[in-house]
Image (cartoon, rainbow, N blue to C red):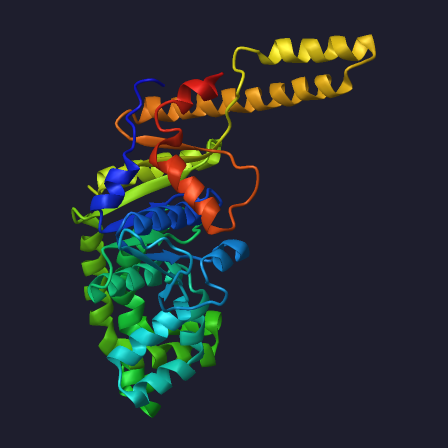
Length: 386
């Protein structure tokens, strides 16, 4: 993989205004986002990192001991170069509540907050977390407080949910069911059924059987209360989508050398290219490498077996087997990275070595940042190939 295009991470950190780390769940997006943010701050930029449910120890290392929807300063950052780092964890319900308070009067806000359908929508409705991450990004950008905002995207079942969320909300708000359900609530009281045609009545009768009369009433009342805010949601969704396409925004696709994660990364790369989104490159995490690639798996296992038969050097035999296992992993990782590169030769890539344990402090994040900036960028593919 000698012809892979290297990813200039430090160059990216010095010029980008927004970096969006995206990919499948469990590939190290949160750690990558945090490491990039720490490195950028210690190189002199004012940075805010928006994380989504980080591991407990990583959150503690950044001073995020409690779920907090407000950016807070991260202690322990070297500010010699004049930078600083703020960090926050997305609270999607709090973000939704803030939107309601901003765009509705006090009486209507109380009505919305008390509605059971709103409680479900703001806490667990499919796509809400993705949309609220984008909403919060828009708020942080509008504040103008930071040179760089680093976003860790939600752990969706599909990486494409993140890009689709703004448009999906717009389609939901413009949908036929919304328009139908708004009419009876506006009509009010005994006029509930009179405003419908026979066809619409059949439709609502079906919904009534599925949802129940009270749930349907809650839904229609919620929509009536929320209706004046629909235009604002659509407008902000459009603005955020445009923000993602601006020159100051860069996407980093994060993956690990496993089939499912690379398949998801390929889908995301293709989607970003189709939507003309600014793709900076890919971070391939947890890549295995060998310090002695000339000693093959077969020779290592054969030597270990010979030592076993001779009845001695158990420690040496165990080391040889461990080397064989690591070399096999490195060869597999290199093969999968090569397959991805062959399919997407124009995607810049940097590789990060598999760590001995979880990253849970600022020193660990600095080490990851160093590898992102050049540790395995050029030499690792050949080394990993073993």
